[in-house]
Length: 142
Image (tube, rainbow, N blue to C red; front, top):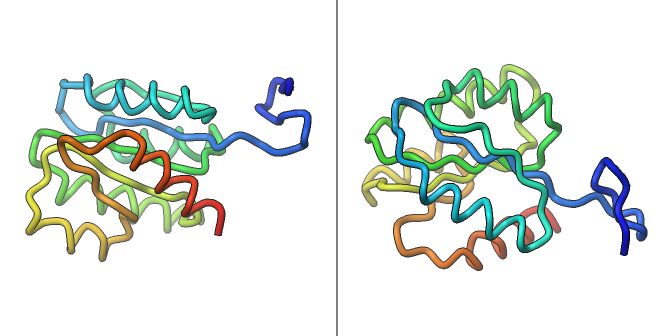
């Protein structure tokens, strides 16, 4: 099945669009690049913002790129501030329908607060990329 320039296939269905982002000062991007590649291999369209992004940059890019999902990865320990800030900005901009997931080195005890802030799921080290793909597809299907 062919696709047009906007990622719509011949059946008229738009591909899932994902913004992959590294918030904060964290410069380690191997994990997010592996996830991004897996999402692309699964047929999703992925926009990678690069490292050291502010929450404002992430939300601006997500809205500009008209994405369905924001996938953030962080190793720096600033997840408790940066992830909720992204959610706050999405609400302020009327874009709270964007599914937001996170990953990286995040202590288990921090996960409930992140989910309360609106992060749909947290994927830790060792997560099989298929779990991320299935989660996105399941959440966007319903």
